Image 1 (cartoon, rainbow, N blue to C red):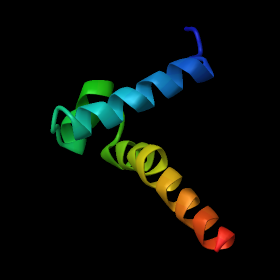
Image 2: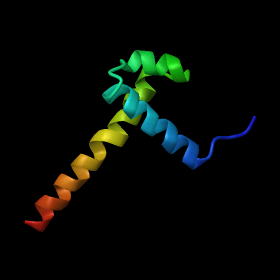
Image 3: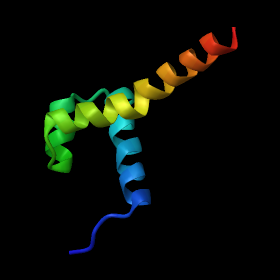
Image 4: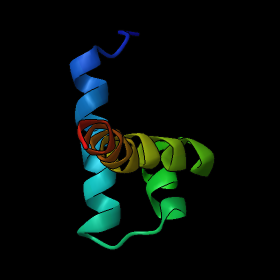
Length: 64
C-alpha cells in the first residue's frame, strides 16, 4: 500500500470542505464517504475553514 503524499491529503481536505459547504453534506455522510471518523472530518473542517480566519483576525489586531 502506498502512503498518501502531502498533496493528496491537502486535496482530500479541500474536497471535504467543499462537500460540507457547497454540497451541504453532513459530516457523518462525508466521514462514511472517506472511511474516516466524524471527529476527524470535524478536525479537518476546523483546520481548513476556521484556523485561517482566526490567524488573519489575530494578525489584524496586532497591526492596530
